Length: 446
Ligand code: PHE
Image (tube, rainbow, N blue to C red; front, side):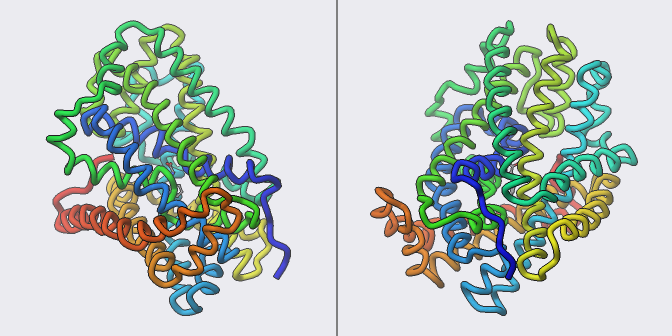
């Protein structure tokens, strides 16, 4: 086997992983879900679920990734044998291809908003690029452009492409978000938004805990990228000195920070414009924001900064998704990286292009199918780490773990028993709409 790529530094690995995690899930899905699920009540449950479910789940993926030292197919083959290993690894590859197919369409919409923001071209009609109006030949074009950016980075490999770009983009995202949050605080009429977002409402929480728990768990896993084999692949490029528990914590904390900051921008801004953030679904939130920028002082500048930030976040997630099928071709089938990037991109150009033309297909893949693939994939990860290879997993956890090493025992208990229960829970809630959609009852709104 040819020499594998590696991270130049441990910081590069952490930044690239935060880049994978912090994406549209954080900047777009998180504020929307928070608004839909009672503001502060959701925020509190989400934070608890990130600690209790997200962190141990992510750690399982890192442990298997470094143990297997390969992309999903090779890693699972070496861990659990060729037959089941190939199936499981292939399942990860399919998952990342499916997610990136719709992710690239949304990325294309964001790219379009970013380019049009300096002139405020869409301010009068903010809905024209997004959601239901966002499908058609132009959407295909912008999807291809977004895919081109992502492929252009993956083309250069782990250290010279992904790591280098993450080291620049991640700090940029953080600085832009802090700036936007500070600017939002100076706007009139935002007080109600902060109150809604940050006031801890114990009564609401007690009354709604069951209904908030499911979406919070799903969001925590999606937002951490802790499910699809992307971070398994990233972890395959690190060495034994790295403390996996420490890095997992660093990644989860930074990712949550990005999500909360995004909420501090989006929710008060919508309140200041008299828009109810809970109404109309996630696509509507972006449209409402785009409209809000039109009536704010310095609108074009703020809009450019906002959509530019979202674009950067989407790109750093997109590259982690593309890296999985590309690196699999490189590792398992010996295809040179550049050719592999080209081949996978061509495939995605077609699958994403199809979704950019069809609202119905897009909604099915981005909602129901993605949830389903992620839940099944995670269950498989947990089964391997918690049930099939608990001894190896504990040993790998302890390697380089330093003062975190004594936690290995509790961690494996959580991975083997607590998390499977949670996943089964979220699986049931994604199978139900699938059945509903098949029966023609309508899929999830964008
Ligand atoms: N975590 C990414 C986001 O929040 C999405 C993602 C999921 C990326 C799974 C990779 C794997 O946008």
